[in-house]
Image (cartoon, rainbow, N blue to C red; front, side, top):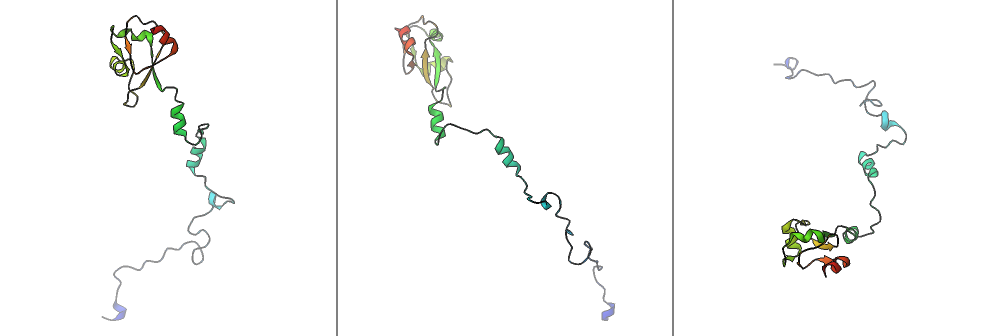
Length: 142
C-alpha cells in the first residue's frame, strides 16, 4: 500500500461557513441586538418587582417579635359570666376545666390565659382559679 492509496475512515466534512469573512464577523454567533444592544440596557429582575409590591411592615421598631407579642389583643381567651352556668354548684372553674367543657380552646398546644368578663348572669356558685377577672365581673361574683 502506498500513500496515495490510503483512505480516511470518516469522510472529510467541510466546516460550516458562519457569516461572511473570516473568524465570524459581528453577530455571526447570532447574539446581540434587541434589549441587550440598547443604551442603558439592564434586565430588571422579576423578583425585585414582586418584592416592591409587598406591603411594608411599619411601626414596630427593632425587635418586632417582642412588640407584636406584647401588644397582641388576643392574649386572653375571653369567657363571659353567663356561659359559666354550664358548671355545677361548687365546681372549680380554671383553664383546664374550661378547655374540657369546650368554652376555650388550646393556643398552640398550650393552656390559654383566661379572662372572665361580666356579660350575662351567673346563677351557680362556682370557685374560680387561675383566671383573670374584670372589675365588673368581680363585683357581680361577690
